Length: 392
Image: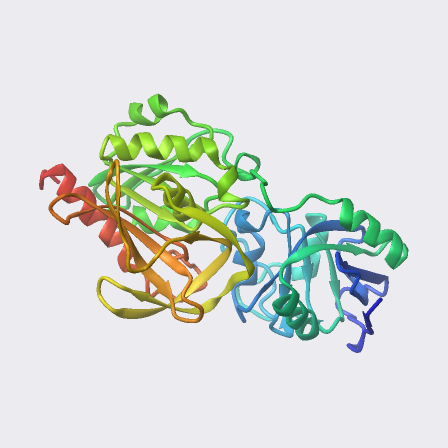
């Protein structure tokens, strides 16, 4: 069984000298030290290339049941504050870093990253070669992983890793969605009302809409179509979220009814994948996904290239050169990732060529940046204005 030794020095800030194991489902083993809570955890091993924004990453519900590997070697410099959470808790199943910051330093920091992980019971591991681990996942693909600081053996941990659930076919939106509807009020005069279906929504998304004069009614993923219509929305939004889009049969059916009624639509990330399936496209699992804040994407409608934040392991299967007739209008690919030509956006137009619904795979709301894709929220407003006939 291949194994990588620990080389990083001990972490005096946390005092964590407890040995920890990381075992991938192919048997590859890394040894390090406990980071955060001591215990055992399992999930899908994924890596994120962002050098900043770890607090937003850890609190993003899209990472539910995933163990995140930070490719940046030094994590925790800015500590943990009370403003940047994207939800009410840390959602990652585990956290893997090379060299935790010994002393956080930032004027907004209230406690260390290590303390927050411990307080929320998040099991992690530090002191391993995260570059070697990332290269392994790039070559072999995302896979299940276990982390343990309980004194178990690699063989015992591997057995439990293989028994843990796969991301294929997992319907997870209902596990992360809001239990009750809530309203994020427009800043200033309210111009529009949007029903935002929470499939794992990040807090910054309704804020970006509120900044543009939208009352955002965030609703659970299990909402019925009649309940959605009762809100009298000017538009419908589907959020980011975890899991396999092929298993999201409820949200797909809900969206098809909204499209049939010609409600303006905007989707992000998981909401993009659901939109693709609602239009009749397939989805597939990427080898190791896109996760980071430096992905180049071209908007095919303007030919402009934007640097974007990503977090997705599945993608929409569509031909960038095809215009597809659907029951709701003409569907086509609107955005492409320039690194690997993965579809990053889909749009729906009416018989006159007017945009009536669209989605993107990446995160235009990205609190930690970049903000090149902010214009998409304005594009959503334009679609709602056209539908309203200029009344707003």
